[in-house]
Image (cartoon, rainbow, N blue to C red; front, side, top):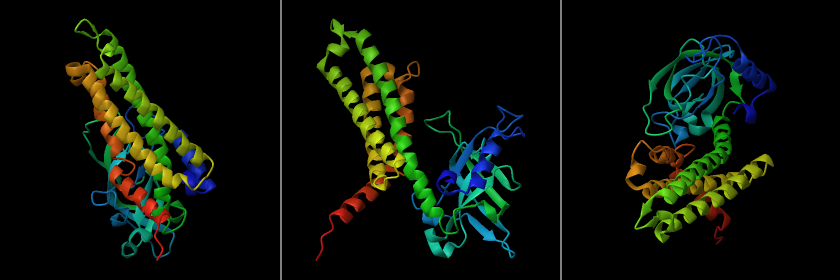
Length: 304
């Protein structure tokens, strides 16, 4: 959000904060800041429906500050973050039009970390609740303008979807490598299983999934780099395609290893657990398909 709509002063503050030698929240580096930041959008009752945001930012009488109150959930690395980009409503009656993006110092009084989620996958990434209780933030902390929070959040997610595609490709490559190597040393009926057409076809389909996912992911990234507005329409397609492909590849990877694929002695079960979240975060695939179909109907609208 800061790169998308922040001022030069805000960008400078972020860099200085991340590089500061002041004590941070991360216990791994108790004597300096962690270098982490978080994007706080999701709430218990406002996931895909961002307009239902209950976190509020009330402007003080003199207009110099906002008082932040609310709770965010599923926030990545919040327990380590030195600052957060927080979406809050300045007027809940306006729905998503009242949403505003704030740059919040995570060390301010009133900011606290709640539940640490015990996740099925991506366990090396911390996921936590964040609670804001009468947090005073300066008016200068607004990213963009009042009421632009939804637009900035969607733009942030749009750019993040290119990263989702890349992450999917990386995991698929690891799965294929593990499966291909195993299939060459696992012998049944007198020959390596890679010589069985049922297995060789799975390996071929994995490679197809990797190359097609890489192509669409690179196209989205190139469009974003060029500032091409068509990236907004292609991003959801890439997100759905790559994450669905990853989950198919993960399932087949476990299948190739058979019983060993289900055991923690091999990394395949971890890849399968990690794969699922890619269909959920950065906007669920169900929401992405709604966006995609809406664009299709707009493009081919029947005029009466």
